[in-house]
Length: 263
Length: 353
Image 1 (spheres, rainbow over the protein chains, first blue to last red):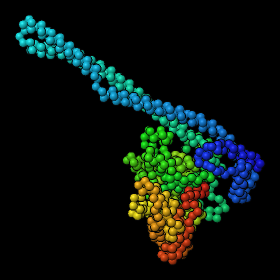
Image 2 (image 1 turned 45 degrees about the vertical axis):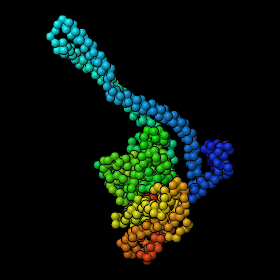
Image 3 (image 1 turned 90 degrees about the horizontal axis):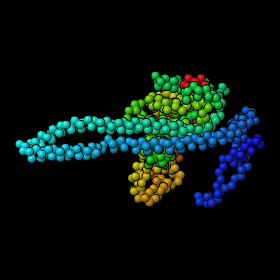
Image 4 (image 1 turned 120 degrees about the vertical axis):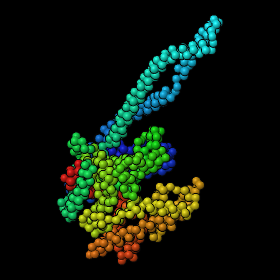
């Protein structure tokens, strides 16, 4: 068991962390209790022995102690592997979180841009039409003026008629232009919607990746059960028959419940 | 967990987990020596900002309570059962179901199972839980273990104590008090009584009394619960209950000895009525033995003097009786469930995989 003591010492050293007297003072600690490494190792060793003694009456204690030592050393080794894996996982997680943030930001920007685009009237179009209307009206006025100089029946009448005439011509053009402009805007909106869809998809993918990473975070190997096989009732149990009956009743109730659930 | 490759890879061993899914606390005991308990509360970040700050999608127990201001809090169990009726139609019911599932998952994670071990779990569920409710518990656990079984909570306490014959278990939880008569077979409906005068009812009563007798004192339900757990007693006061509560922000001392005694005493009468009923309807030949084997379990059994007070009341009503308090009230149910898991034959577990 000398090897176990050394392993315990190594393990305690490995698990301990360093701190300074100043740091302890900052935390309000003025006095500490000191317990030597050998003493801690001896205490653990004694506790293991005592536990083995009380729990494994009749069993070959040396075999159990050797198996425990082997398991302990395996755990130490796997702990180092685990640390490495954990660091890598943490890095991946951080990357995924950054990616996720960037995607969330971009998605939110795109959504606000789309909202704005859909809500905002097209001021350029209004200005454009207004300008054109003014030009047409100016041209009509010039025509009317010219006609009046040449002696027309009623200048107002003539201007109205001319305006109607021109507006008729122009409205067709406007319709065509409006359709073209709308199509363009629709294309913009569609493109933005596609982009948002894509972003949402990558966001959910990244979130899923992050969830997986989070699950892996508890990649810690866990603690071994003391059992290697399913146990069941001990054959020597004085009340084995009663307990068997109870186990059967519990199983039957659970089978009924779980079959009902899957039905 | 049901994936074939995963099953085949589970060659390292078998981990048994016993779980006591309680209204206030959820406790697990496992065959790797792990014993953990967590307050049965689940919190989800309210928004992206809090999620970023907390760096977690879900928080449990004490951590959730400490950060409750940035969380949407759920207490998925009420009066011993899930706040879920089987038809999670509205958002709140769905959220409570998810919280219950997450809580069960967390309790199993707390047991630190290895990926290469078979995990078999027995969960103590209230006898009164509906079928839909039980199905929800099983479904939630199945996502994390290889096979799961449910059993009645007071039964698991008795099984864990190896007291299978002529024992009356009184399991005082937060939401309910469960009484169960054991007579060497699985208890039937007539062997069990449940009522909702339990830990939460004591808290509510104590809160009312503090409100009436301590003008201006500010407190929360959690503070009252902590007070009860620290000072709770019935009968003769072992010490004066001098507690500090804020009044207009200033810590002020109050003597709550009488209030705490009175609030905790509300448990005695219904428990004694239940004990009387279960003893009176038991085989007369075994009544004397049964009344001398009353087992007090659950968090409520930690109230000082409760065993003596019940014995006193039993003396008046039944001419005598002996009340035993279990050693580990918090883990009694989980330890019993663990023992059931251990004793369950291999082929029984196989049938549920």
